[in-house]
Length: 126
Picture 1 (cartoon, helix red, strand yellow):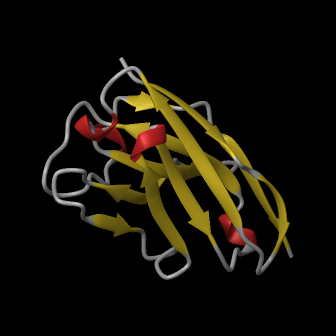
Picture 2 (tube, rainbow, N blue to C red):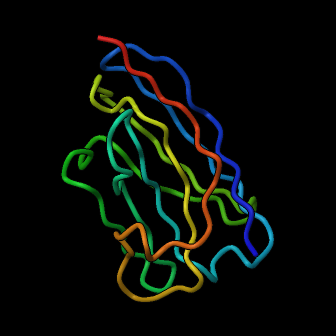
């Protein structure tokens, strides 16, 4: 079992920045791949970014490429999402997710993740 707790969401003006955190517990942090997803009101949950611990590779959704950065602090079992140049269309609940294992290629599909956090709200005003 893996428990995930997100934090760091809030209200920010367009062009601003936020850093989300995802604290993980329950299993060895690097033994399962992780990712961030988001869900806007009335929309499906969509992929944002993923990381593979096996390869170190990351994959970003086109909509956030160049603006968002995934990172981690393994000693603290924490995954981060640095979000810069935020836009109103980035407004959503952001979820941290963990898979059952790690593999070479980052996982971009929602169904590939088993564990989910409770989400943290990000609101970007225009």
